[in-house]
Length: 599
Image (cartoon, rainbow, N blue to C red; front, side):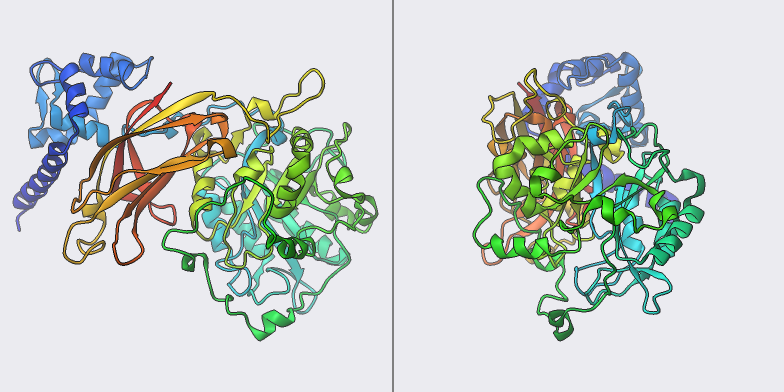
């Protein structure tokens, strides 16, 4: 086929696809075009008015509108971009603009918008758990690949469990006392250095779960120092009185670890040696698109008691280790590397949550420990996290590398809500959605109410009943793109798909809700045109959830895409919302056209 014929065919198909979509445009979209156009054409001045009045872009200029029109230059040769008083849009190109990448729900091009000069404890930080695992917690391979992938996504906290090798003369990274295959520590460190700042310039924290003898700690100190050199942050004093800011630590590596316990060998437990029916199971086996995010209402169920006891014996922390006594056994060069000190002091939760005005530290709690403490000490946790760092990690029974509801940590001010990044599912979608905020830099400033104290030292109470602060209206107009990103028989062997959209809020318990549109049968370009209203008491922590599914009468409904958006960053107006697959990768064409309005 000649180049000219091939170009003609591509153009014809592109235009045909476009006209198919615009033919389905809801009357409200046509109404907006008619209101902001003249004789069927929308000029740059018309578009500017539309941006200001409908899209709520109050500072939009004529130059902004002209740039938007110019961005559609590739449509000129299709004769659907018109010259009329300069360049103008007709209904088709206006529709193309609305559905285009130039019209996103969150403007990531704005970059970092929040104040980055406050202490680290004032930020939620994109945090990984067992960052080296490629799959489940018991038998998967350890590798630097998931570490690289996490850093490329913008994750800022990488966790490494470090153990002696079989000869006791080197250091490996593995999940101790399991069948996971190790990876050399030096390989992980070099990969962190190479990829740490590809997605964000803000600091990377390496949390070490240390199971080493003092002589091997000295080796680690040498490796870390030689690998990172001048970008390694080593504080002048033994303990920080206040954490530095992300801005002051740009392109720096920070080491955080707890004082080590007595050396433990990486023995494989009996049940792991004999095999477990779930050893080979991964998060992908749970459900077609992952289990529903658990609610935060009420205490843990009775079945969780056994799991909590197991967590308390987990390697994450040892409450019987005294901080000062253990630190004396550290190799001095290793101790100097530790910028963020971690550990559970003796004395139970009273000591754990004690705020020391002279020094700051990191405390780790399992998801269930946090839930239990939060039942009657929620305000103490909030007060602790105003100066100190709280890390929350998955319970030990999550062997498939599943995750929990991250809001249990965020609503109490926990900075490091540690997640298994190698899997997928609804909880992980929430995590990825939260960190679309602030330009995707991996640090999100905590709301002021989590940072401030009242005149009587009162702080935010996560269990308090609060009034509605704002209302978000979401109108799901339509969707398109499945015809191009999926096989024609993917959803149904003999007919077009039957799509519906789930839309809801993840946030504090009072704000949590899920709703759905009607199911539209036999349509690749579904037009729902349904509006949903969400009254939000804490919009600062609210995440908008959007999922598309295809109804199947005889089997489990098929997955058709998802996204999670931080409510605080959603742009008002009509927006093109790209959908992602189950692993969080954006589809090439699948989008929803949605109208957002705050009242």
